[in-house]
Amino acid sequence: MASSTDLAVATAEIAACMTECEACPCCGGRDLEAVACRNDLNAIDGVNDGMRDSFYHVCLDCSVIFARRRQSLASVPLFYQWFAHLERRDYAVYPPPQNYIQAKSAGARTLLGYLADRGVLSPGMTIAHVRCDAGSLLMRIREQFPDCTLHGYDYFESNIRYAHDQGLDGVGQLDAAGIKFADGTAYDLIVCNHIFTHSFDPAADLQKLYAALKPGGVLFLYNEVDHLLRFQPKGRFYQWVALNNFHKQLLSPASLEVLLTRGGFSIEDRSHRNFYMQFLARRNVATVDTSYDAAVALAAREAAPVMVRNFQRWATVQDSRFHGLIKITSKLRKALRRES
Ligand SMILES: [Zn+2]
Image 1: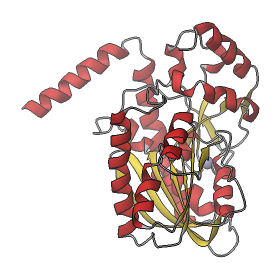
Image 2 (image 1 turned 90 degrees about the vertical axis):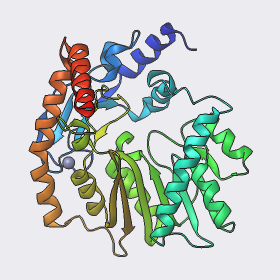
Image 3 (image 1 turned 135 degrees about the horizontal axis):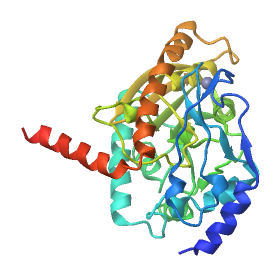
Image 4 (image 1 turned 180 degrees about the vertical axis):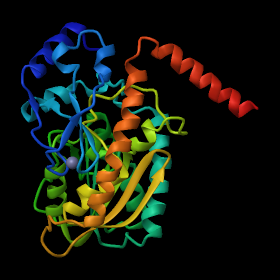
């Protein structure tokens, strides 16, 4: 386990070169409004004060709430060395725990079923999985279509090593600073797991995905948190946990739709698994059209005030001195409602 002195030194170095977004990192909008809330690093001893305030803003054009103050790209490798420690990712050890492997394998079965039902998979495809965990989905695809070319990327060395043990030689290191594909491969399908919530430059990452896909190729996003559900007062997915400092975008269906359509994708299917969003989109054949659909833009503008209202109610509770007490009474009330 790393010492708190190491953490203090590392976070001081990262904090010394933070950057500030001038515009919305998703849509480029400049109609921004501050929405105050602390991030989860406030509760961790040894973290430099310069990392504790993300200066959250909402983009009134696309409704995303984002960390306006974020780590510079040069400091991202150091920042992500501390990911497992700061966010308590206990599974980032080799060999990965059995329950982690089993959970990922079960999740992969569901994802494979989803993709198969929509006719996305076929023999001989070239497929990439960005943030592929221990290779669970790639293994399931290989079982059904042994002739597919499979590439994967993940943050954790333990996952990459495990994937190699399973014969998935095409799995390598995910660059947290931005999506990078190893070579000039043209993909039929790219699957992205929870990437745009973490991305330091979502619009640029989407353009890299666009460039790496064949015209008409398919992009499947999953595990992107729907923050409209997360912050919805009295909603069943209301979450008490603090804002993860590695989450740079707090997305909603509307903001993700703007990002995708503006980036040259047509959305073919959208769904939820609990409070996680899934989007199946196809790369347009024509070059990127930045004059994306007016109805999509209008829906996003209309979603922004709701997002802000819910977020601010949530943030007030989160930052309250009585947070612990409010949380317990609220959970108790909910449990009693279920009983009666
Ligand atoms: Zn925006």
